[in-house]
Length: 117
Image: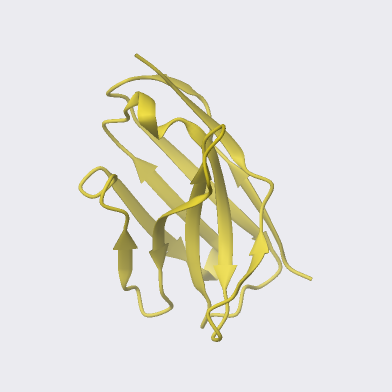
């Protein structure tokens, strides 16, 4: 079965940038929507951004204009470019795949993003 592995998390100063990567071991169905979620300590996991198979993108209001999601189906990769990072962006970031039924059915183990003020 397909596994998702995130990387790129790091400690960064406020205002800095990071690029998160999600590598799929095996082919993700090209029709799947891919997304990035995040979860901060004591908070619920929240959707940050998603990209459909057609390339349509959605962003949470809190990251609009600062984060960009992209995917490379040929390489089975999904990326999250994060600019102008804020302390409130600190969280564990998870990559996920959503099937045609709207179920987020595959999750990575997450990568930690820490933002110092």
